[in-house]
Length: 232
Ligand SMILES: [Zn+2]
Image (cartoon, rainbow, N blue to C red; front, side, top):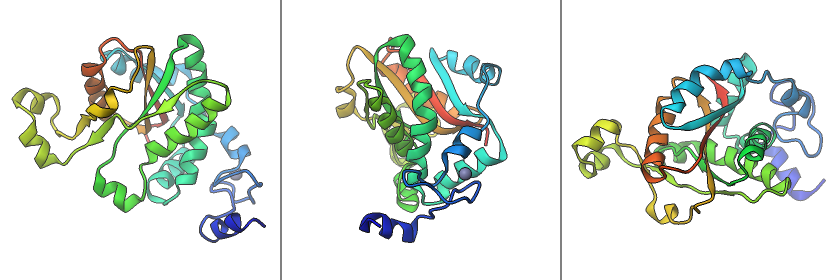
């Protein structure tokens, strides 16, 4: 056994999170059979959210519907200290969604993970949306598509943002918590497809909030909201 995989086997279970069967060499956290067995969103499932997100001129795609196993996966992403699972799901589930969208737009995808607070990142050890983006990017690049992932958005401390934002911003940005990294903004090209990545979507209010901020800075770029699962 390779030393690294021996060491990781001490901390990462080498059994599938869902079916508990032993994982094959290249599988991480979940087996390919369980990934294939997950219930996918149909066009009908997406309609309510498509309507909500059309208010910020964004398209919407989501891989999984709300099932018990999707819930289990999402909880593990956040609280299971399992960033390998996030990379795997980003690769196997978000990657193919983005590929199909890319085929219609042919613009270079810029993956933008939803930010989490520093405090959360510290307790969780990682941002699950960043890891989903990482996996998605691996899949997309393996298809020969030029793409990149950038941390365009940041989550700032509530008190600080209340001081920094004016009255209008306080109203449109009630939590005062998501901002744009100006130095990163400059790296986004004219020919970019902006892809906002998140793990779950419930009411969509946080995603709308983040999308509005992106729209303020990029009024005419195509924007895709890409989420792993619905309402979990
Ligand atoms: Zn399995």
